[in-house]
Image 1 (cartoon, one colour):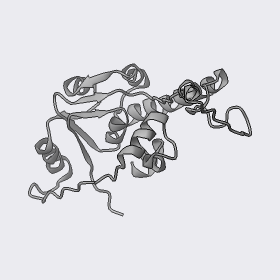
Image 2 (cartoon, one colour; image 1 turned 90 degrees about the horizontal axis):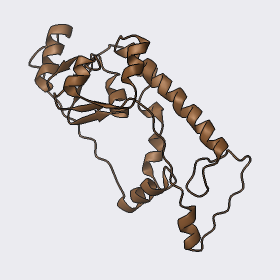
Image 3 (cartoon, helix red, strand yellow; image 1 turned 60 degrees about the horizontal axis):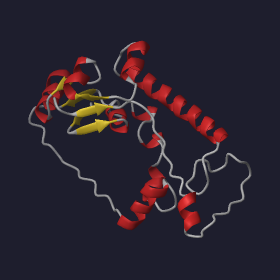
Image 4 (tube, one colour; image 1 turned 180 degrees about the horizontal axis):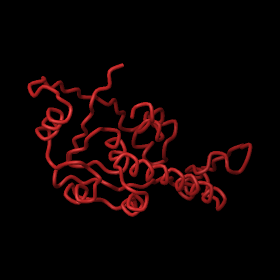
Length: 199
C-alpha cells in the first residue's frame, strides 16, 4: 500500500518509551523545552510480603520452578531471579540503543553514550542528533511541504483517544505491578511500542 510520511511532534514530555515511539517517525520535532531522552529500560516490582505478614496474610503458590512468576509482589526477589531479570533488561537496552543508532543514523558508540538513561531538553536533543528540528505543528507541516510535497492547506484531523480508567483497579495495579488488576496488562511490553512492520 501507499506509505505515508510520519512526523512526530514532542510536546512537554517524550521520554523513554515516548522517545521510542517517536523513533518510528520519518521526522521528529520538539519544543526547545521538551524533556526527552531517558533511553533505558526499567522494571519495577513491589515486595509487600512484610505488610501482608503484619495483616496476618500469608500468600501461598505452587510453581513449576523457582524462577516462575519472578518478580512478583507476593514473595521476595531471589538472587537468581534478579540476575535473570537483569539479563533481560540489558538485552532490551541493547535493542533500544541499536534502534537509536539505526533510526537516528549515528554510530553505535555515540548512541550508547547518549543512552545512559539521562534526560535532555529539546535543545540538547537537537544538538545531539536525537531529533531533527525544534518547533511545533507549523514546523512539522513545513517539513511535510518541503520534504514530501504535501499540500500546505491539507486539513488537520485531530483524534483524541479516551482511556477507560477504573481508579481503584489502576491504583492497585500501580501498587502491586502489572497484575490481574490492571487493564494495561493487555498492552504491556515493548511490542506495543515498536514493531519493525511499522517502520
